[in-house]
Amino acid sequence: MVNPFIALTALCTLAGRFGARYPYAELATHPRLQYTYLSGLGLAWAIARGKPLDAGISALCLVINGSEVLDGYRQPVPRRGQNHFRTLHLNVLAGNPQVQSILDLVRHENPDLAVFQEVDQSWVDRLRTLGYGYALENPGPSQTGIAVYSRFPLSNTAIRVFASPQTPALIMDVCLPGGIVHLIATHPLAPQWGIQARQGEFAALGDYVATVTGPLVLIGDLNSTVWSPYFKDLLQRSKLHDSRQGFGVLPTWPVLPVLNAIVPGLGIPLDHCLVSQEIQVLNLRTGPAVGSDHLPLIADLSFG
Image 1: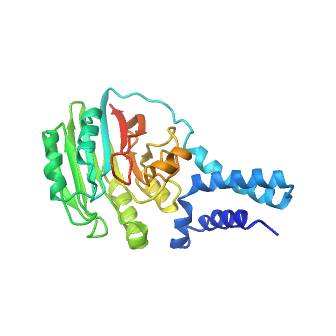
Image 2 (image 1 turned 90 degrees about the vertical axis):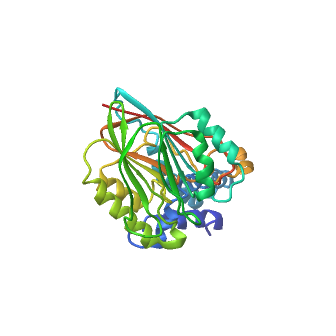
């Protein structure tokens, strides 16, 4: 009889393979890193106990999940643009009391573009003290508010509904010294609030991006991981590049200080920076915990 722990890992791994056909099976695609850890533990246990069937199942799960995780470390072909800029993204968490920690983080990282999500009017009032010269703000109730702050002029700004009126996105042209970059800041609904709504958002975003020419950055808490078939469809529709490629998994949620200290990287990558082919990703990393249940995501980009 197969060990229940190993059987459950195998069942979850298998369920994820049907995510494109059955929407709720898509939820099983997200903990790929965790499945990899569990498969490795199961394999070690099975070998130690002399359980060949358990060992075979664990080894197969380790290959399936590990290959998807390791794909994120495959280094893309390097390119160097002349125009460098930095973005910082953070889902602040609506009730986060550590406002000063976030302000200090932004001042330390000094991004050219700072994107914040789950912001209400009180958050906007505090973020304005950062002193950015240009902004597009859409504070909202609960988890819908987004604000973008820029060191450079913004043009063609708009608040746009792509699929769900509950989650309007911000779109704008950022007038950088070396040229214009089109920016989309968005926060689709979490799967528990509407898988179909998030899928519709991805499809509409992909179709919109496909119509835009020139450098483009799509940034936000997308409530999805790189392993979701719907996320992969977004990349295919839009022809955007996942900035994580070559930099690894970089989990951003949830922030669990005690568990993260025991098992580094325990979490899933929900926050993303997607870029068009004109943009080179020079570096991508997560920032420190600042009271939110998300980590900041900081990207150094270039174009031209």
